[in-house]
Image 1 (tube, rainbow, N blue to C red):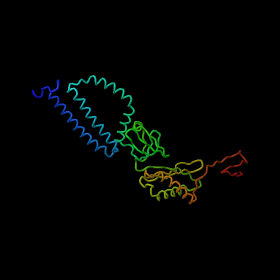
Image 2 (cartoon, rainbow, N blue to C red; image 1 turned 90 degrees about the horizontal axis):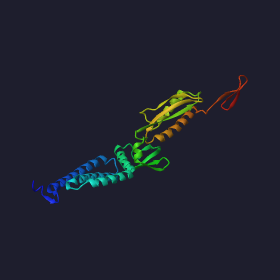
Image 3 (cartoon, rainbow, N blue to C red; image 1 turned 60 degrees about the horizontal axis):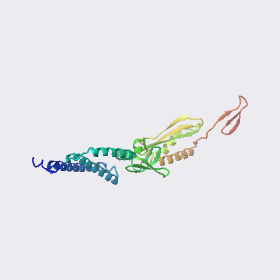
Image 4 (cartoon, one colour; image 1 turned 90 degrees about the vertical axis):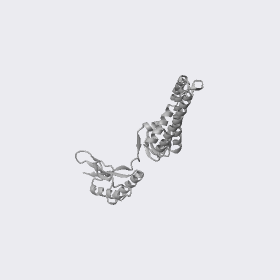
Amino acid sequence: MDILNTAIYGDITVWDVLIVTATFALAFVIAKVVTINLKKILSDKVKKDVLEIILKIVNWGIVIIAIIAVLPQLNIDLSGLLVAGGFAGLIIGFATQSVVANLVSGLFLMIERPIKIGDQVSIEGVSGFVEDIHIFSTIIRTYDGIYIRIPNEKVFTSNITNYVANVARRFEYTIGIRYADDADRAIEIIKKVIDTHPFALKNPSPTVFVDSLGESSVDISVKIWAPSAVWYDVKMDLLWKIKVELEKNGIEIPFPQRVIWFGDKGGVKVESGKDIPT
């Protein structure tokens, strides 16, 4: 014990050196274990270059904590450093508040993964494809081909609408037919068109029914499920095919009509642009 308490420089003893050495050794071991496990967890969630930055920050963060922990053991007064560090930290904190918020939000986005590159989303009123997810910001390519950068803090704290997170997506039409047409026949034709389309899903099954009786038409509601990746193409394709098939079978989509009566007797009935004496 006398040897351990022997001063080797001022008040620093062999025991102090051993404690400092052991602390650094333990810190390096902890840093290694943490970074290895962090790499396993984030390897398939974060891009390689971003992952390397995260691992370096964590590694050096643990080492810096170890250095601060052993300074008192070396008889280094931290009061002055703490005061100076407090002021510096306060200034840096205000200056980098948004940067830190975006960084932390970016890390949470990469871990939680509510969106992925290629997803069709709507964030903060911006709709389009997720082009890239950086550590500080997310890039959205709108449907018009415009690239928009959104800070990750806004992405993380906003309501995110992800149009392709589910494998299937539903779309619907309201198709009006004339009152003189057979609604049951129209429903049967529409169902056959849907059944023959290769991307119209059978499960969940489509639904076709009379939804309302409009002023000029019998309105048929059509609800169809399709794979999220092609739902828009299916929607456009089926709408035209349904129209064509209905017309082939003599079922037409009517124009708006009005019936107007003038006077109580001997008036003129105006219907569909034609004057009919009464």
